[in-house]
Length: 253
Ligand SMILES: [Fe+2]
Image (cartoon, rainbow, N blue to C red; front, side, top):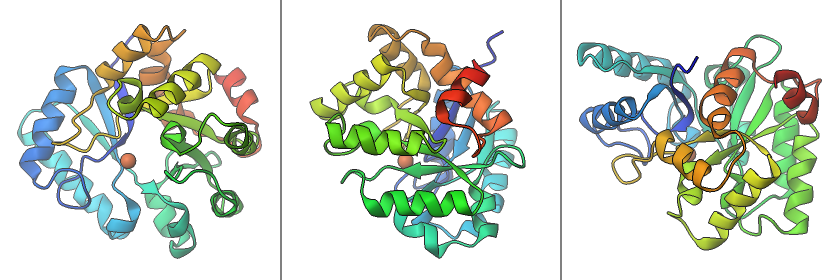
């Protein structure tokens, strides 16, 4: 039974990064997301721009406002991590940003616009050593994605148990054509486990309904799995480091 969209990547917290500037802007987007069928959003500010230890309190403030405004949206605490910030963060901070049950914790790890690099792989390896699997945020936005070298780099991470979170924007044609093509390619190859809005309201107020509609139009086999079942499964079951991406998908299918 359908319960609603689950968004693993959204800049929903007010006044912390390049997302909403005010609580009102956050609430306005929350209302729209709920109207369009979203049930749960993981608030994922850019980790480099926040004090991680303050995030649970900021999420609690937002939840309280949602409750008072009678906006039926669940919000979880998370963050979007860049490769350069991995060595700066303590394990207690990573725990604040991570999801999934014990033994299957994972982090939202951004593929840089500049593409995959040895630094990217090294920081991902450090996260694994520290006990965290990775959900790779929007590889389709990276320069050169779709080229042979980038494919090999992506599979290098997938082989270590990572999974892909693609974005709504490129698939909807809101970004450059190369990213649109890359997004369609991810869909065609079945490489994405979840779609996230990466919304930055009010400028980029994308919703998962927009993403599902675009995935349907693009001929995706199981569009609902990208916007509801896949992300929900990641939150509830997590990602195990001792299983390959392929076996994760097979086991959770
Ligand atoms: Fe983001």
